[in-house]
Each structure stands twice: as C-alpha cells, then as structure tokens.
Image (cartoon, rainbow, N blue to C red):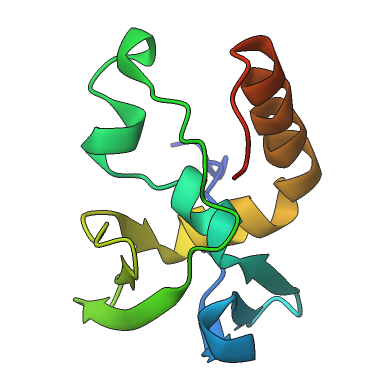
Length: 127
C-alpha cells in the first residue's frame, strides 16, 4: 500500500470584513489570508459575473461602458459563499463569490487594463 499523499487544493480565502465605503463608490474587503482590497463600484460593475455581462460563452461577453459614476446600493448575502451586489443603475444579477472577489482584487491591474483596452478598441468611454 502506498503512503504517497495526494495534492490538496488550498482552502479559498474567506472574507473577514466586507464594507461599502465612500458613499457606495468602494467595496473594501479583507480576507483571512491577510489580503485587503478596495474595489471600486465601477470595477465591480464592469466585471460582474452575471450572464448579462459575461454571457454564456466567451463570444457573448459584453464590454460595459459608461459606469464611471455607478454606486453600490446594497449587498445581499448569498448562502455563506457569496454576496449579490445591487448597483444604483439597477444591475443586480451578479453573484460575487468570495473566491471571485479575491481574484478581482489580486488581478485588478490586469483586468482593469484589459477593460480599458476593450473600451478604446470599441471607441467606448467610461462615461
């Protein structure tokens, strides 16, 4: 019998604090791995995990312009694994898992840069 251990996936980071700040303009999230992120409402809105934004295939992904002044109106807990963010532009279908919020924080420069490039390529603006 082998005593080799199988690799295990690291436990996902868990939020220790989630707070809407700056009049709904920022979501501050602190995780149990020591990482803390301040994610703008605009960034969260354009990166919504909803089917409306992401589509059901990569070809259906939407570039969301004109969200510079969007704000977070409400956070709705979803089970014990996510939060649904309600924005003041009425968008409210994205379920942001803890892992996705962590990814958005860790990958913000890359994701935001790609978004700005998409806007430029499509002659769209942040509004």
